[in-house]
Length: 279
Ligand code: NAP
Image (spheres, rainbow, N blue to C red):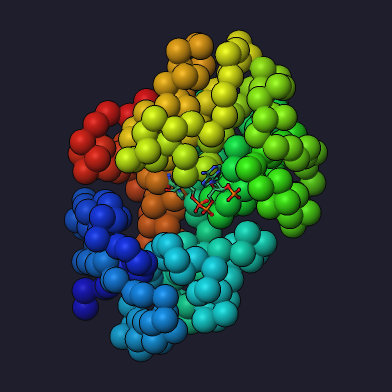
């Protein structure tokens, strides 16, 4: 019988996941389909009960359900539990088990660029849900020094306090971080600033960066944010959010099928949907 997978969220109409995963199922000769389900906040519990009753094999979870879904699951992976958010669910013999592949996907994306993570002095800009997944996953991967700056400093402090892994972290405001930005090997932009249509905005200002600095922005629309353009102009190597998106999807596909898919193929597919080329 054909297996069914999907993604639940609100809004969901522009999700690139159905095209990406359906292509992977076809390419890997798996008899399965992946659908987008528009689930409003108040309908989450009914939707999860329904997905379970229908025997759906697995699904992704996106905004606004990543945290609210946790009490509705039968089990949760320890990293997802620490992060407090689930983006991937697998149905194993009728039990729904939650994972978070966002942060580990981001880590994979960095490793694919040849970065030796343990040697990096990292600055995470932002302290929202994506920053939390990335910060915990980098710490899990053994990065020793990860500072965080955010508009709301208290949110960055609570991220630091909640981290279950050993890591050295200084928390600051964005303006304080601007003064020491030249010290960092790796800058990770995780705020929503610079996202289309506010493409002329950037969260942090700098006139100089460390030689060989690597700047990563998890936004993928536009493919090159103002933050990335400015970092590139100064000489940094850059990476946009397509790599994180593709790798979180690849890890979800692996959880569902035990096959780690071809991420180059996935990237081409996503870029086709976005209408551009990656950096
Ligand atoms: P979130 O939880 O709402 O966090 C938003 C972050 O942006 C917070 O740090 C917030 O600061 C900051 N921010 C928002 N507006 C700001 C402003 N006007 N000035 C200064 N800071 C501001 O969102 P999220 O889920 O982490 O997502 C953040 C971005 O990552 C989005 O653009 C999303 O599309 C992208 N994303 C990409 C991927 C991928 O696969 N590539 C995956 C997940 C998310 P405060 O704490 O001060 O409010």
